[in-house]
Every structure is written in structure tokens, then in C-alpha cells.
Length: 310
Image (cartoon, rainbow, N blue to C red):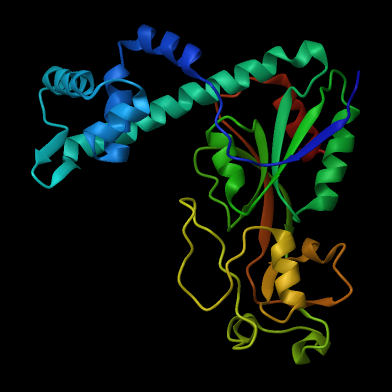
């Protein structure tokens, strides 16, 4: 069996899910109105929402009206200034989005399961780029030696994106890092705990120290900490540069525009123009392997078994 590792960077391209989604919708009682309502809210304009759905505006209005009558409550407030969600509409939007996302995730995982017999990637492992490189390599080697192991597609993504990939079905299992990543809603096993180091430009006054305090690093006026994107793509306020990946971060530090506090394993393969200094009072980071609690994949079980045996 071919146990090659398929490595790719995460991208946000959409996938066609209409066929499977429609089948599930028919089975659970016509959530079409939920999908129409979701599109209307995203645009907050019936004309634009109808255009995105590829239908005329009157059918969209009738569909939403029918859904409101069925539920016995208004979902949208219509006025001269436009359309706004009611409280009930906000609840329905949130629940409908979660339901549709679950259907899409189920389709992706089902398609991957069907690929197992072809030798193509049948399980997807998400990991933060630049983190836990040695642990990831050992895990893949250990799993490849498991009886019945399948090929693994490794998705290297930005900070905090592993959980999103697990939720939407683009990944089956992921390496997360507490306390930075939220593990709520997943089954997890702890794999490794480590301290943190400050990554500084070589030659910076603090780079010659045997260790530094966290307050010293966070208060450096000439080397602000970077700002990573939130889940919605926006950046928090602050003086530090906006960064999206590990390569950007290391280049900015080398240019003297930023510093960073990262897990100790981040010093592996560090550029020659950067220095790692221990930060003893920084919180320890625990790497965990996480997967959806409803997963029955034998490949996921094998990966977890291999990880916990390391």
C-alpha cells in the first residue's frame, strides 16, 4: 500500500454540496427556507439575495414569508431603511448555518472514505504550519507502520485554523495547541507539553540573555508582537504587524519589525539571523490530537493510537 504523505496548504475554495444537501433536506423536512433566509440575511437585501440564489425576488420573498408562517414568528423586520434580523431570525440563522455546515462536512468525509480503496488520500490531518514539525513527522512514520494504514493528506494552515477545518469537514483529525486553540466540541488526547521561547533578531540586546521574562518581551517598543487574524478574518488592534503565516512572521522578525513568543519546538530549523531565548514564566503549551466525537473512522482511530504511543 502506498503510504506517501500528501502535503498541501489550506485554501478556502468552495466545494459543490448541493446534491447531498438536497437529499438530506428532503429527509429532514424542507429546510430550503432556511437556506433562502440565510442568503437573504447575508445580503440584507432581497434583490441581491435573490440574484445570488439565481431566482427572482418574488419567489424568495414568498419562501421567507411561508417559513415565517410555518414558524409562527417574524424572522426579518422589513422597513424603509432595509431589512434586519429579528431575535428569532438570528437564532434560526445560527442554527441553520450549523446544520448546513454539518451536511457539507458529512459529504466531504463520506467522499474521502470512498477513496480509501483507490489509494488516494483517505484521511486528512490538519496542523499549524511551523509548529510541532518533529512530532508530526514521528506521528506520520508511526502511523504508516500500522496494519491497514491509509495515505494521509497533511494540511498545513495558519494559527487557529485547524479547528475550523475539523468543524467543516475539510480535516478528519488535527494537532491543536492549548491554551491557544479552543478544543471545545472535540475528543482529544494530550501528546506533549513544552515551554515557550522568544524569537528575536540575532544581535538584539535580549538575544544574549540566558532567559527573559514574558513582560520584557511583550513590552519591547521596537519589536511589537504580531497580530494574527481572528476567525472572521479581521485583525485585533495594536502596534504589531499583521501576519498570516510562519514565513511572514520569521521574515518580519529578521527585519527587526517584530518579535514572537512561541512553543520551544519552534526553535527547530530556526534561521541563522534569528535567536530563540527561553521565557520561563510563559504558560506551557500542550499539543493535543483532536477529532470529531462522532467519528467512526478506522483511519482516525489509527492516527490517534499511533500518536498516543509516541
